[in-house]
Each structure stands twice: as structure tokens, then as C-alpha cells.
Image (tube, rainbow, N blue to C red; front, side, top):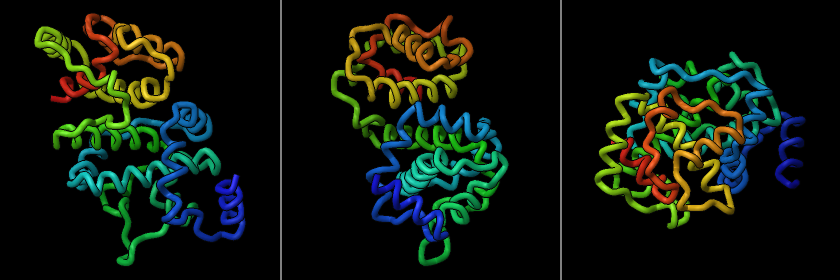
Length: 244
């Protein structure tokens, strides 16, 4: 309630909505919620960010630190967009600095001030957040760290060589990038947030339950070719193998 009151006061008075010391305890929690994402889709029409726009942005995010900073900003945007709404074609940078009054650093720059990010619009917010989140998980994996460190240990089992082979073979029949993004959201929004899941359940079945519950379409080719022998307890290892 205190955060909500601060938001309304600052909005009315046209003062900065976001104070740096508040970033890490309220807004991130809200961004990691599929219901929030669905509400945003109803408020601001969402479209995928084209690869031609994403590629140069990804190249600019040359370190885990920079990537984490940008993802933090996007967590804030997601947390506030559900309250403020916005025009789909409005530039993200305009919304960030002119609507939210998000502060820049002492040099007058910020994590989304690069020329490559200039064409990101509010209609791209959820796609952009997802791409950033997947990219961060990839960088963590490259550094030998768990891409989903907050997940319970029972979901961190490895997979045998035969299962790895089946998984690699299945990649010839669907877009690995799309499955990676889908599996990433499944782990963040469903596995991490669910209190009671049978870790010995087939991963394939659990993903289907998630898709049905939230009325999502699975990536093309997934239903026919994704291995059905892998267990839910191996979901992180599955993501890592697909990313290799």
C-alpha cells in the first residue's frame, strides 16, 4: 500500500516515480508473474520484438552486469505499465523517462539509452523482457552458474546421455529458440511459483498442463517431437542442453 500511495502521489505531482533504493524489493516480484503479463496484454497490445531489432541490442549487452541492469529496468517497466497503461507505438525510452521519470546516471545516460534500443516500443515490452531474461540465463550458464538459481534443488537433476541424444535429435523438428523461450517462462512462472508439483512427472505432461491452464500455444513441433521420457526434476538440465 505504501508503494501504491507513493506512486499515485508522484504521478499527480509529476515528480520521479522511481527511487533507486526501491527498485529491488517490489517491482521485480511483480514482473515475475504470468497474471501480470496477461493483464498487460489486455491493456497494451503486445507484439514480438523482431530479430533485426533484438540482435544489435544483444550485442550491446556485452556483460552480465549490464544485462542485469537492463533487466532490472524492464522489471520496473512491467510493474508500472499495468497501472499506467500506454500507447502500443510509444517508445520505451519515452515511457521510461517522460512518464515514469526514471533517472539517468550522472552522465545523462541509462541502461536503455543506446541507439540500438531506440526502436523498442511499449508493444514490445513483454517480448523484450523475455528475450533479456533468456539471455541472462544463457550468460549464467556459460559462466558455469545455474540459470535458475532460485529453483529448489529437486528440479536440478541431470539427464543421461541417451536422453541428451533424444533431446538433440528432436531439435531438428522445432525452433530451438522458441522452445528455449517457452521452457524458460515455464520454469520461471510455473515451476518456481507452484507449491505442489510431482518432480517425477513427465516434463512433457507438465508443460502441457501449464499451456492449458494459461491458454498458451506451445511452439510448433514441440507436441510431436519433444522427448517424453524426461522428468520434471530434469527441467533445468533440459534447458541447458537445448542451449548448448
